[in-house]
Length: 120
Image 1 (tube, one colour):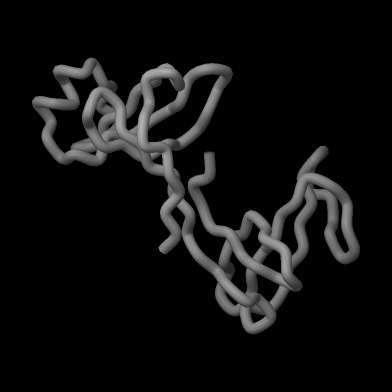
Image 2 (cartoon, rainbow, N blue to C red):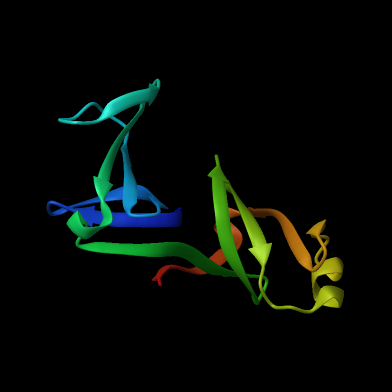
């Protein structure tokens, strides 16, 4: 489940983080020019002009007939955020009020449908 920036650099796609005129590229293993920032996480900073594509990827789905984005996965559960904009629906589903107008919950993977990635 992806929810964040990705960049295409030298024909490969990486998790990314834009930083002004630069882009931080991340990967789970060592590589040329990548420095370990914590165990299992390596980073390389490149100029944004070197990146072929920089987009935001968000995973969307439906649960109980309602629209959600997927924030994370843990075992057979997805952490989801309701995007339907109707608080009575969110409350009736038993979702947690994460912030004003933002409702989240855990959905069983088996109950989630229409799982898809959107790139913007």
